Amino acid sequence: MLSVVVDQPQSMAVCERPTPDPAPGEVRVRVRYAGICGSDLHIFHGKNPFVAYPRIIGHEFVGRIDRVGDGVDTSRIGERVVVDPVISCGTCHACRIGRQNVCSQLRVIGVHRDGGFSEYACVPARNAYVVPDGMAETSASVIEPFAVAANATHRTGVLPEDVALIYGAGPVGLNLMQVLKRVYGVRTFITDHVDERLALARGCGAEADEVINTLREPLEQALARRGVEGGPTLIYDAVCHPSILEEAVRIAAPAGRIGVLGFSATPSAIPQQELTKKELTLSASRLNCAMFPTVIDWITRGLVNPGHIVTHQFDFRDVAAAFDLAERHPQQSCKVLLDFGEDSHGS
Ligand SMILES: [Zn+2]
Ligand SMILES: [Zn+2]
Image (cartoon, rainbow, N blue to C red):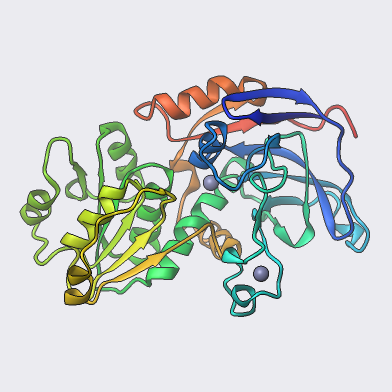
């Protein structure tokens, strides 16, 4: 099989690898589409502390089960599936209280073990969720980033009277926009420096006055001009620069909640006084905690539309060009998919 392998930081190639056989409890997926995520770029650049090289990357993928390991019902062969990348131990404290996405032994497909940028990938059978008939595979390939947004909103909670603010109109920010507007129906502002991304936010449900280019309009003035008094009550940082959290803590309304999604190692300077005075809640959110069924339901009911963020598809052999586009041309692209084609050369 052909796989996209990062053998060390800054070194990526499409390589011939032996096609793996599924271990007991696993299924083998013939991958069809896989989405490029910011964290794949981080692995490529050597900025993910959890990854061991060489690694077949990719954790957002969809395909068809073509083989199953011992203990897995053979009737699953042929199923179209989307893969939840979170593998947990089931016995640690976090797992026992239903927070398995922060398992002490967490293993993420495409990070700690080989992932979906490959013609074939073996994954635990329980991580492979059936894609309903009628759902396009390109749509199903962005269920994982929607699950990230679903998890963040689950962690903060969403109240009908919330006024929400999302920093950053990348794939995660735009998915948050759809979830907040279309699932919860709350007023939601979104910021970015790139007008093309803010135009995509309009397609994700944002009203004209809910998009703010903070290069042109200082955020607090923009919110005041739009009638937001006392600050947003619900904030998500989908930019994840340390300065954003500092600003979010400063502008949040009393009793506000802030969803934290970043992986920066640089400290943010946050006065305890701001947190305590307003009784702010910081809700960190990592990956997703069993959110795939929720997202599949939202898409099936037409509440959210994954097509709004998919801007490009590349043949996987052109992964270098796809990475270049995703990284260097945010005004031209949002979610970029790799196409691994239909089944051709068997196992
Ligand atoms: Zn991702
Ligand atoms: Zn665990």
